[in-house]
Image (cartoon, rainbow, N blue to C red):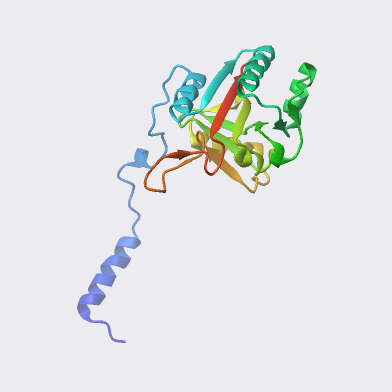
Length: 211
């Protein structure tokens, strides 16, 4: 196929341009710095603000005794008799308190569930969950009421920080599922009417323990 002189001239100019490297005009604008302001009074406060904006229930606990007292009050107010917890570290922490309502029964009998999280994202008020956790994929989604027990050292500022922490925690292979749960489940697919608790828990509680 014969190329016209005009087209050959254009291709020649393109080849010449590609052979010469051109420095980036704005090298500092290529995602090296965060677009969000990280100045705030603390990750705990930032997470609490964003999480409660989305309908989450936030409880700060300065000790295990305070956490159990708040948990007991919640269970009594809700009238729950069957709260599941499949996280060994949490069961071990709560064992000395002999909480009769916590068990490992069938999902169909569950009224609420307690689980841990990988991390908490302060900027968005999100919880980072994964398939590597003892609660697995099903429990945080199936339960109508989800109670999370987290520690202050699990707080990160942004999503990119959580992803980096996950890579450091699982250096050889990331979990098969990583999800970011931001407040209770909600949808407005039908006639744009907001409905809470359709695809997951209708109420989410975060007990943040500072030890």
